[in-house]
Image (cartoon, rainbow, N blue to C red):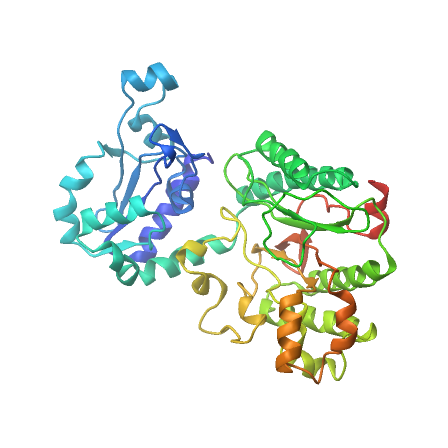
Length: 458
């Protein structure tokens, strides 16, 4: 946990911004895998962590903006708990460590439901079934309607509070980045012909657990990089193929890292692979140089698209005016996703609030066009935002076939040349970026990224 004053200040700031009413912050509970006593690895709700800091199941927080009081509901451990799990601090002592004076047994939450119904209540849309049922019981709002009645005011306040990271948060993210560095360098060294993808994935996930709280999202590690989120690790590495590794770690306080590198199996790029790789690397470096306060990430995404379209035009895969091609979305045949997303306590930070509320605002709206529509974060950058920068180029046979058949962006794409790349796979390069006062800083030691750096590791 951070110092208790940090959590007190956060709750007071939230209380001031809300003005009146009661804010409901449910923590997460244990979730069974296949029977009640065999549970998934526990992960606390990020909003609860941000405001209350307590990383244990079975807690519920209430912030009362009218009275100025905060309350944590939870139960002390029993003798049976002590036998199996050891002694733990009391709920009162835990609450005191984060500056909360009031505690009540969990059952009292239900006794207070009548009081809650008489107040203006605020809650974030719940994403877990057990919390939907819990909020239904204490608010009287049907679980299916909770998203409709959730507090847009609270969502906006939490996005505002959590978007710019403070010094302590940045330090935690950098711890996760250091673990992520070790994960990716290990994967690079292991990327040799005959090694199973599963062996590499298991090894780097072990590094994530050894260095913190495990992985920040399910590991993507595959020779079939044309599938953007490929979690299948069942293939044996083949010389000459490209292996994408998109993986990150959580610090012990659950702050995330998220990196991607693409590695030639055996250490040497073919010329064909190198041509595409250098385009993606140029897009990555170009966009990092453009990141600074005041710029919109939507405009930087579109610049990455222009770099990619220009490079592919030089190779003969695209044609025509580059700016027109990007305006028409022709680049999305090869770059069908967004440049990046916010990162912090969640690898896609705060997206449980609704991705549209995190990534866009009254000024910057999404572009409803294939490819660019998948940009998760487009709004204007501010100092201390943490974002990912992850351009890529992919050759997706089914998509290529569809576009050629339907003559989609036929003016800008040389389909006869593109067909030579149907077995290519994909390349993505991702860094984690802190927006500074005047520009940007790559967080952590930069994972080897130039072809020469990668070759030296194998």
